[in-house]
Length: 281
Length: 261
Picture (cartoon, rainbow over the protein chains, first blue to last red):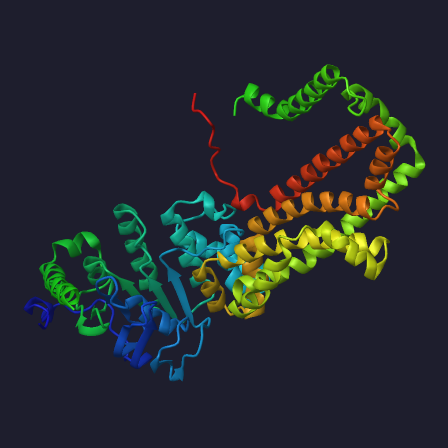
């Protein structure tokens, strides 16, 4: 099934003209095999090739167990692929680096550091002077809506606030690519919606490349320029769908937009198909 | 917390000590045994010990050995435990060795160590070192193992090298667990301090205690037991203060009272 943008999109020009697209991440024939305890190999990723353009917001969508997080970890350099390779700006990825900033579902904040200490950690590690790092970090904390919480410890924050700190902490060392691993997966529906809106606002300012793993169809459509649909057992790319919706996006407008609705319905249908075939295998 | 509840919490340890002494006093009066002096007799003997220069030198010598043994053990055990927790190869190498040493009472090794190193400070300090290091190694090991992978990944993405991750992420993240091990280690240091002086009689608090026992001075024996116990309480209280300061970030945010009346 191919998702074709509805006719009406032809006369709606995107608000911001797209920059000439150049590839920032190239995933070439990546396979990932894990040895399970039963001496049976589990193929998490099978022959994945994907190119991500600079400044694009790309979501990887799929049922649980389709290897979408693994693919993100390969790009992050946290996991070495069994075969194939991933490149950033033409350089083969061999390990983690500050050019790729992860944001995890588990937040992974440093609990012994305050909010400010967490956000300053990256810049300090990069050799930014303390006063400068602090000023930048305070500005970022304000940007993610946590002004006044600088001296709080992570245990004193709610889940949504923790994820805001995690986002600020990653933005603080200016990665070229944001790697978001189901970042809002552990949050309640309301907090999730608010964080999606805020993430879009922040992203629309500087249009950093984002690779965003999720299993929520409307989250993927709402945020992304491109949705990569994966199927499971083994993890493969089923379809890449361009989301041709104008930016800046407002949730209230989008929910009423028939094009948005069609994307969601079409992709949801595809999701169900993918999930069923997976279950049969 | 309400004022009476706070007061009750502060007074509780005092009541516990007074209660214990009262039970002792009654038991001793009932049993009427020569080798079991009353609590009051034992307490009366304390000033004699603490006023005696010789005894004080002995007790200070004990504490010095204990501090040295404890300090060196902590300095060696924490890095070893952390390395074991983050490297399967290191853990696979040291685990069986430690499993052999752990169940052996360290005092049982004393006679052999005495043969090698004599009855002096080195032997006793070494025994204290052995007693302290095992719980500290194990708690550091468990603490390091439990550090969230994603936290280390976050550090790696910021550009921390493996060594920096060990010192700047694994160490602080495992600190609450490490300090639990150190607290056990502190108690074990006190125990091995006394037992080492019991076996290698030469000086120290244990020496005073067992000399008095040999000479049938039971009030001195029990006075020494009180002194050693008080030392334990004081050391633990000091340690707890330091610990609470270091890991305030990990303490639960809400107090869980026994009842919600």
